[in-house]
Length: 142
Ligand SMILES: CC(C)(COP(=O)(O)OP(=O)(O)OC[C@H]1O[C@@H](n2cnc3c(N)ncnc32)[C@H](O)[C@@H]1OP(=O)(O)O)[C@@H](O)C(=O)NCCC(=O)NCCS
Image (cartoon, rainbow, N blue to C red):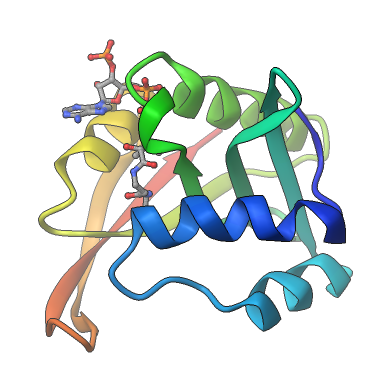
């Protein structure tokens, strides 16, 4: 896993489009690359981007903003590996809690987070406006 750069954005966006109903735009990826509080990583295999993770680190809290694995590389532990690496990286920065939102219907992602010890702590009604779906808020205390 290494830091994401501007040059990775086209490959990242290809995965993003194949992963989400409302994919992030190029501008959104650029914004997180330029933000001093955002951290962006890509997982590389055979010279290609196979996954990425973006999160905000603010004091003792981390908010996972985006994570996806290329559809052709799923269910091989890449998602788990990326999450474990960032959890270990932020632990040494005295981070105490990680948060994220996940669609109610997103069973694969919920399975991944539960495996890491995340617990559902609440709901945000109609968070995903394009489908009016609720978000489950999940948290992991370190
Ligand atoms: C969620 C996602 C990142 C998981 O990545 P992945 O590399 O396939 O996940 P892993 O192989 O590390 O799986 C880890 C665990 O998550 C759970 N899981 C992953 N995919 C699953 C699926 N399709 N169905 C049920 N559980 C699943 C399982 O518990 C799995 O462990 P196991 O394989 O030992 O059973 C991937 O499915 C993805 O990119 N989805 C589209 C984007 C997305 O929804 N991102 C999350 C937004 S909140």
